[in-house]
Amino acid sequence: MHIHEYQAKTLFNQFDIQTPKGVLISTVEQSSEACSELGGSVWVVKAQVHAGGRGKGGGVILCRSMAEVESASEKLLGLQLVTPQTDAKGLPVSQLLIEAGQNIERELYLGLLIDRQTQKITVLASVEGGMDIEKVASETPDKIIKFGVDPLGSLSVQDCTLVAEKLGLNADLTQQFNTTLLGLYEIFTQKDVSLIEINPLIVTTENQLLALDGKIDFDDNALYRHEDIAKLRDISQEDKKEQLASEHQLNYISLNGTIGCMVNGAGLAMATMDLIEHFGGSPANFLDVGGGTTANRVAKAFELIQTEANVKGILVNIFGGIVRCDLIAQGILQAIETVGLTLPIVVRLEGTNAPEGLNLLDKSEFNIHVESDLTKAAIKIVTLTKETSE
Ligand code: GDP
Ligand code: MN
Image 1 (cartoon, rainbow, N blue to C red):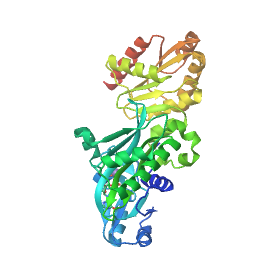
Image 2: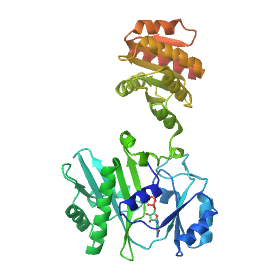
Image 3: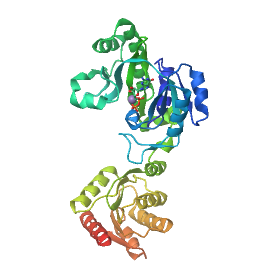
Image 4: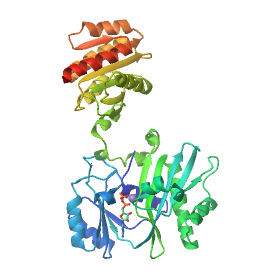
């Protein structure tokens, strides 16, 4: 799960990581009050969306008067912001973070993630932080400092000092840096984080170390034990289809092809997609309906697949290990009726009570082709969808 920058910064503050002062607004009218509250004469207006690259996409605007803050707010609120990290549609902006402008001397990068190769929580740091960190990482990877934390121990002040030294920080900044890095590590481990990042971590002309931006991704599988974090979810930032899917415990990913897939088990879903490709078709989605499939979930799955713009036919591939194929068949028939599905469907059932299941589908009045062989089923759906597009 992703959260907004302002939410990340609130969490930062709880763990003693310093940030610029900021006020969150959701209407243009609130902008001048926010400026007065913050004081000073320079403000930064920042669009709150679940994507980086806002600086490059026009979502971060430096303002030198209240009037400028007001017009920046007017421009951003209600916008679909497109950045190098969003799709062409962009993400809706309904909140802005107004911050006191900072005098930046240096922009550093600091982050923590799990390095799967070394199997350690790893600190990443660089003196070349800011908007081009991806370029730094790919073109001059030696400019990225890496430090793996001992999985049996924890991050020590000495470890932090070592990183600070490599960043070339003086004694005063090193102290601030240690607090910052220890705070990040605490958040990472306490809240089941998968990625936490400050980019840029700035050194101001007043010799202060501040988190100017904040990004935190949480492990969805651990959210059940962090009620405070789960509450931060903003579904307006999430893909509508994937949102509906997760509400019904379906693993769903939209793709560009023409053949909708409904499969139980992620591995079987991948194999099914490979076969479709092998016979010259292309999948419209990845969908794993899971083990304990119910008629209701099958209906939701059909509903999702039908919303894909390009879909011309559906391949259902279910292996009845735990669930019985005749029950699945009943579920499919019920779902077709509920959803009002008219697309051609090929159903491959294998496993417990497969013949009974296939027989049920075969006898039905709907446009269903049944197969017990997966290869034949894949060829059939590719042929059917080619016919409809001609
Ligand atoms: P991102 O592009 O989505 O990562 O958004 P950031 O929050 O990182 O902001 C992008 C850039 O805006 C930063 O790298 C800074 O260079 C600049 N910026 C943000 N806040 C301030 C500020 O208070 N003062 C100045 N001078 N620049 C800022
Ligand atoms: Mn940033």
